[in-house]
Image 1 (spheres, rainbow, N blue to C red):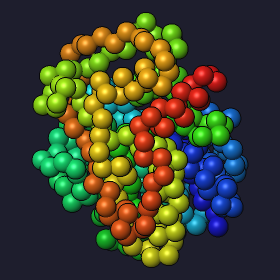
Image 2: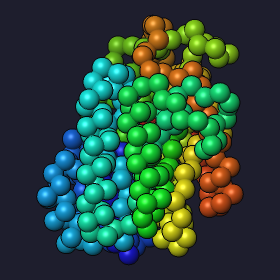
Image 3: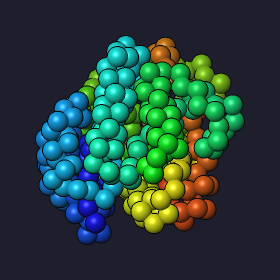
Length: 322
């Protein structure tokens, strides 16, 4: 079975590639290495390419002939998307359209799409299920929601099948220490807190302490990257077997505030670092917590790393190697 993975040299993509490789799939990673790293591709073959280059993408797909494509390639920073919206619409939405057009031309009909909880915006009900209205509050979320709309329309108009996985806050690292989060500019809370503990930053900024939450800071549902990788494998089985388009949330169903995460990082690292409270950051939702019962009931997903301290510990062990 052949799987093409766009963005497979990145944080989440590389963990999924490892899981696919351990299961014996033939893998081709297509990545421009803008934020990814060649060393993170532990299985398969890496081809350096950009989704904006449809001619080259078409050549690669024609030669490889994948049975399915997993699409991770995207920009993901909420705050940056507010400052540079066109960058996000071009890369996340237009480049995905390029991929879909090349897939159609080559009669590749199965896609797993890396989506986000940001498509929900400020939800009316917590936890959020997949039937909640999509109402993004930042360009990053809009860029992903636009793709989901395209996927729905394409699926209804043809024999194309997709699964959209809406990630909540992905964190942690490979327990074996082979791969982890290695962005040049860390923006994820846990990673940035760990880097502050290491002394790479003088202080950690807490953006907003006046949200309608118990301690005034944003609450997020943190999912370990390996549990997310397993969700991709069972989703692939589902898609290749059932061929029915669907959407699934990926999270644990409970969240932690920014302040709670900061305290947990201090506990794990045994390092007391400075945390500075500053104003809100544009585009942040107060609370994002997943209802993942659909993934659990329909695909029998059973997460095994649903523990904040374990998530932070694996991330810390990885961070100390960098």
